Length: 195
Image (cartoon, rainbow, N blue to C red):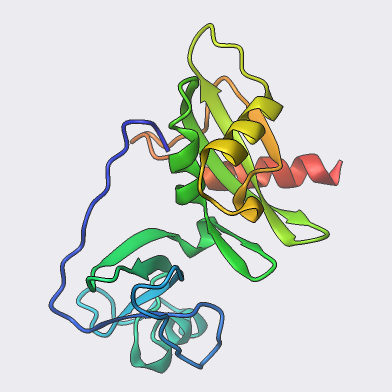
């Protein structure tokens, strides 16, 4: 996420639910207005009938009569739905879902951080923990421990969301349109851990 990122709203006339993730065939709605994150599932689909030659993926997409798009969201007390993240870009830490977007949005408030990307890495105690990659402003002197301490002290996120490892890099991998490629970071980190 870059510092100048913006948010977008989605308006739909179709029925939408926000359900607890990873419940298999059981569709349980999250509480409206609670600090819960769930998977947004609209009831209608105007775009796809099925995955081409992939009945398993098609069955998973339309499980329970709702469309499982892989987007995570929360309900606001006023009934608005806020899309927070892609499910594949979250970290599951001891059953708590950590939104990479939420952590990134805190990190880019640091005056020396230009961009931030968060991926999940395995953790023996918690199952998963956030790992951060950042680019910094030219000439700034920022250490990884400074970022961890700053995040812990200056934000209202729970301690389990505070990154335990920060990598300061010259450049973050992006597509030709400028979209951050967390998948590349995950693949690089998996290779590094196997060495």
